[in-house]
Image (cartoon, rainbow, N blue to C red; front, side, top):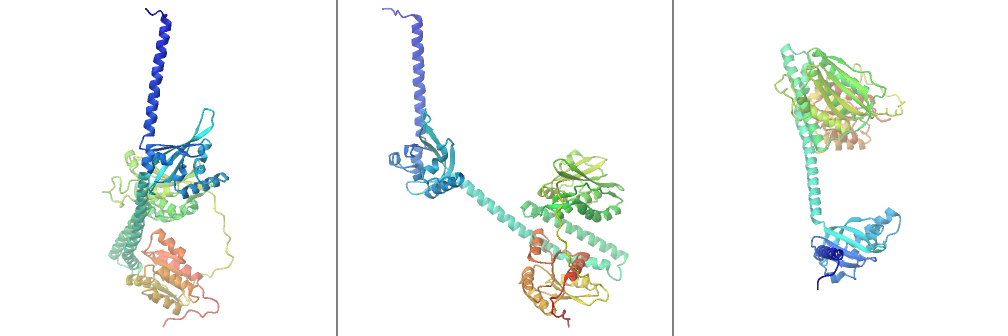
Length: 565
């Protein structure tokens, strides 16, 4: 019999059949996806009821933890599978964070999830055989259509591979730090080894230069060349050590408010003679009202002197160098060093701060290594500043440094007690200076320096033990102490002298080739009156001795210094 249904009815029936077929297909796919997820071996899926008792334990959880699902479902809580001490620690941390008592166990694991916050944490899972492994677990609260809590879903992954990488990375970092420490120690030792012979070269050259009778013109030219080469070699040693220390992270800085007026005044005194020799005019600024910046005073001075020396060195004959200070936005002060040199191309400007790149000056008559600007840049950055340059060929260059402005430091209470004046060179009583030094050349050098003062005599000791005995017997006014001595070090000897009432009052000056800043800091913190680095600068040494003589006094009631037979 022919179908009597209306065409519209047939169409509706066909549409419903298509819809039902699609729905069945979607459900089948969803079921397949659900089965695939539950059977995945790559991650664990654990579902609990609202009380925290396990209801679903997928294949991945079985593989990961070693339990069959029937061994845990309706029997244990996920917290029973974690390290109990870590679960307790998590409860304590939550209690502290929320100022609310949290019981150890699953409540601690599910606390945030129960409040609608998905939580991810790292804990240690314990397998059925007792072995452990680190895991990352995500926990989410499950709710029905009425927003009623019906359970929790925990998805976990094995974190062993990541932890292994972290461990290897930490070991690599530790090894690198150990290597850096060894590198720093090597640099300190190498500095000492390089400076010790250089000390004799420069010291004796200075004596010849200023000795009596005066050197002949030919000798004077030779001595000038020795001194020029020696001081240049010292500069190279310092630059290389600075760069290596910065790269190893071992350079210590003391950033505090620094008077830029004082620093620029000292810099001007150091560079003006060189500028005058080359016919270079110098112009320094009137400082702005706010003249303090946050910096390490010694390193800021080093930065500015390097920029000033470069401006003089690479200037035109009879050129000019001007220093400008302008307040920038955001509380910074820009110090600019402008020269009238040949200028640089844009490509050269982009290469300015590359190590050992002298921008084509290798064949020029000016000495250099290409390290100075690199060290300068690193120092500025370590002090929290910025450095840059602008240049125009045929006009000149401007190198600038920006440092954070600072308020002037508060004034310390001034001492009211009068200090004794330095002893006069003529007609004064003889004072003994004890020098503890194992290097005969250094001892002879200082002996000749001291011999120029009629009121001083030098007593030498080749090691610390002999130096301590001499100090106790002769009670010198000042002690010069090398650091690297055979047997007892100079620092240990200084501590022994400080602990002895007979010698505790005597100023002790470190005289050492250990010129790395951390060595100097360590020496000053140990209790030295002053720290003089080798190669010795004669004027600096005598100023230090005069300062020590000015404050040196024997304890009340003790006899005056004994004479030397």
